[in-house]
Length: 501
Image (cartoon, rainbow, N blue to C red; front, side, top):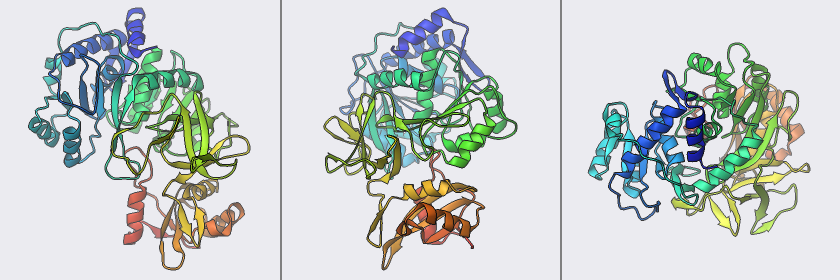
């Protein structure tokens, strides 16, 4: 069902039910839907920018958003989800120069930002783009009398997102409404969601996993809880009113503090592999929760799912699960499927993927082969039908003539008791071409690590050097920042401590 219809239904049938809460700011479904109608009318009155790369329905506008988790963010994001208008999701942590390049490439009809973002405001002014600051009275002044929200074309674009992948310049992609409508239908069943699935999301609203959780929650008629910025005490207060958490693994681990929480019954996590130590920690801290760990990509949507119960999982814990509903998998090399157990590029076929990039990604990232789509991740299908990740095309390490995927070694390291984090990198070596280096978090003795790896991996896949690290650099999406780790290795940064035997 289109989200516009769902919100209209909730506003009529349960007008006083809580829709969104960010700290002290709370909106009922009636209040939220009224603000959507006012914002829709104000956007529709804006003059159109010249924008050949993004075609929108007649009367629709594209607005850029760079306000983090400000209290107005859910209203603006819900406007893109439920009205004909589209949103360009800018990362507030980007440098001014990158913001300026993106605005120039795809000029929005309006920019919503914070008054402190002076560089962004000046860039918009030079391009003739109206900038509305949401932390002043400018936002309330911008709103007009409410107008009914028209039908939203399922083929139309509702979001422009960005993914950096393996490059520093973000690649832009557009997502059509029909792909998320299909996703919502599939995830409602896969994650066992109901109108009582009140959801807490500790992460940034500009990230896909968080925005999708907002769409899921509002479609159900449940309450969506978020924070202006992460704070453990505030997070626990929010979780007291929810039954579900959606978070990347790093933030899920940060929530596992103090005493166990019995009221959480569903957890959804993605963005990085859930290592065994964190899985057990989450099971202990949320004893009644099922943990839905999915693998996917911004460009592909859902790919596979592994649901962890109290004592068992729907697929082996080392895997990323089995194909998500609506999705078919094919592991391919040179256009042909590879045998089971052999490494291949992961392709998906379904109705959840984008059509392509607006810009960037010519030599990396998303591509299609007929009806099949990939972002270049490499994996293998196990004997039980589950999928294991091995790395990414171009991320393979060639050492002494052997092809090695770092993800396979990281998975083996994560299975060793006491290891709570691991990254494996390939660095240049004069005679081997490349050699493997492991960076670890945990207090397991080095001799024990080496002996455990020797049981799990052939000799040529064993790292030559080991370093310990306690404070990991993370990307804005909560993943280990491999680029910075590689830089630290080259510079012999003292934060990387050689592991002693």
